[in-house]
Amino acid sequence: MSLITTLIPSRARALSHLENGAAATIKPHYELVDNKDGYGLTVYLPGVAKNDLELTAENNLLRIIGRRTWRQPEGWTSLYSELPEESFEMTLEHDHAINIDQIHAELREGVLRASLPKAEALKPRKIAVN
Image 1 (cartoon, rainbow, N blue to C red):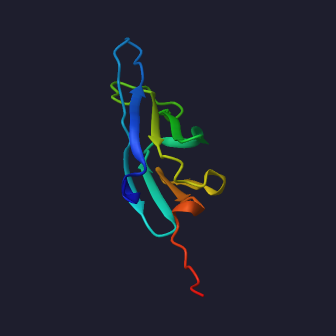
Image 2 (cartoon, rainbow, N blue to C red):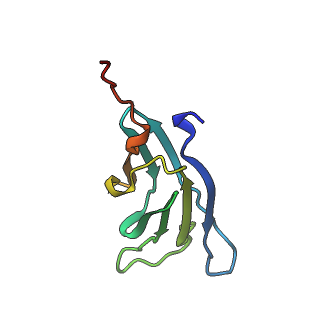
């Protein structure tokens, strides 16, 4: 398996319910890139606050769970809205190719960026010749 495919989406599901009972879904758009030291994950999450986002890594799974809540300005009355509260869960499976103790993630302006360092076993090594 090539390094670029060691992180594969095993399941992406989105869950939400509008007040009238109809379901709405969001499936976050994301990009995964590879470099010699690790992977870069970018997930686009407009309207998701840091407090409404959870990123966990366990065994060979990287899970992103979030909720988008639209808040109306005080004193305003909604006449029509297509902005429901929405939840999502996105799971990536990685064949133990990531050093989960060194993952770094940051959410800024609706974009989650995570650096996922490769496990030492996957990094190239220079071997001394005697």
